[in-house]
Amino acid sequence: MTLADGNKTAAIALVTGGGTGVGRAIATALAEAGYQVVISGRRSDVLKAAAEDIAAKTGGRVEAMTADVGDPASVKALFDGIVESFGRLDLLVNNAGISAPGVPMEDITFEQWSAVLGANLTGAFLCTQAAFRIMKAQSPRGGRIINNGSISATTPRPNSAPYTATKHAISGLTKSTALDGRNFDIACGQIDIGNAGTDMTQKIAAGVIQANGSIAAEPTIDPAHIANAVTYMASLPLDANVLTMTVMATKMPFVGRG
Image (tube, rainbow, N blue to C red):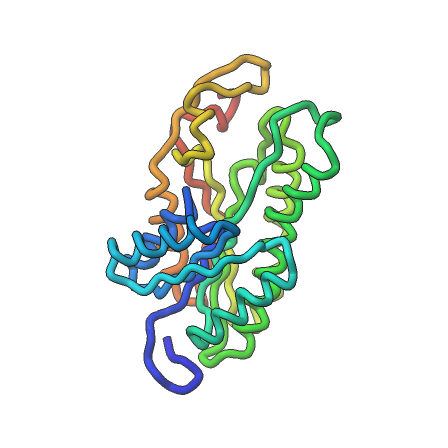
């Protein structure tokens, strides 16, 4: 890629929620592929440690920038910081997200609903909006956005209304972004993840409620498989796009009746 001033540099990637779990695995794979990587999140200590570890492992440039993706001012500061430090943005991975307690729908509080909506959907929109402004204006023009949709973008788990609603909405955001980005060389795709083995999904391996009310342990997969898939999506030229991809544990109860 080329900066606006003509100096050659590696492509620049931002991974939100990049300090832990799937986000950290994606950031590591991108750094290994030659990207200069920014990871963002709300916990500065976690981010700093992750950035140092990834840089040491890959030999690449990895920077930590603290941000709350649900806060417009924080998102603006994040993207302003990227432009100041790197001069452009080539790849945005909208990975940050949270879930609400797995309780009956009537017991979800407004605050819990709002928190999930802010982190999962509003955050992805605000970051996409900020990325569009940069990608439209930079030279060379364009870039790529990859959204973490989850298999909950198509099929819910029991007692997961806030999370499922946001992930269904991410599918709509992905398609709108892909459409609106066409004329500006901005490609957008979505990866739907099923049971990546992280701290967040430890309970899945131990046993979670199924649609029939039973409790069952479910298989998980190494987050590196997700990271490799994202790296492939990112490697395509901007005239090609993976609109949707599902990467899941083969034997998880998702296809058919489980």
